[in-house]
Length: 92
Ligand SMILES: [Zn+2]
Image (cartoon, rainbow, N blue to C red; front, side, top):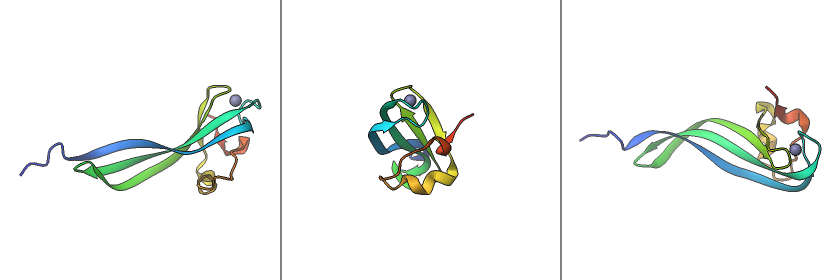
């Protein structure tokens, strides 16, 4: 039996939350942003079996930025009441 093509590694992005009517943490404008969770997963027969390498990023619509979010802020992001601040963003 051959397993070529039935398992592999993929990367996926899930929308965590969407905020409207907020002050943008990057440019300071009144706008909207979305927070996404990025992760790698290993799949067998297209069924995800385990995940690793979780990271978050923010996408803003006012200034069209996509920026990473610091690992230290990850726990807070699962809570929908949380607002991303300037200090949570990774500026390269
Ligand atoms: Zn902005």
